[in-house]
Image 1 (cartoon, rainbow, N blue to C red):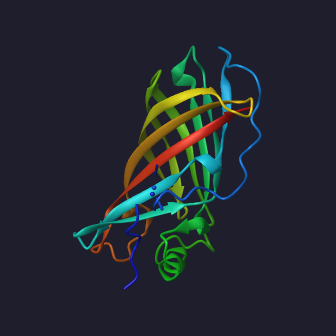
Image 2 (image 1 turned 180 degrees about the vertical axis):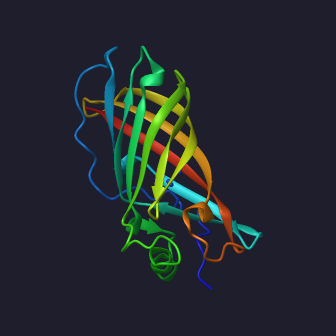
Length: 204
């Protein structure tokens, strides 16, 4: 029987499946100190993770992650509610540390990556600040769109060793995969899934 991972990913993030980061080069950071004006940070996939976990047979926990994704987040120090987040995930990049299981996850029983290659999230509202946020937005998975809430925590920000400026956030949310039509083996896997996010962004 094919199952989701048992390793330890959102942080959509194996999932720490353990901590498998995206395999592309880090974006080139912009130099200089932060400003009080709204600032956009491009997600650095090399230092970010999107992990997920779910119950396996009601006995254990299965883990997974996505290794290829992109996006950005915008921060306004004077107006935290003006913040925004955009993320796109390549569904084919799902991994659990087992090739046979990963192939099954990419097929029609789960992520159906041929028909739905991209998972998307767009924020619609942000509350809180300066370090704790509740991000509301629309998650698109398997062609279906659902409103979700993501609790985000600002880990820190500052200059990096390459002369740029970064900000980092952790987050977590839960979803029921059957809401998106992912019904296969729902008695044995979940169906509730916790997504764990860990993002570093480079100021543009």
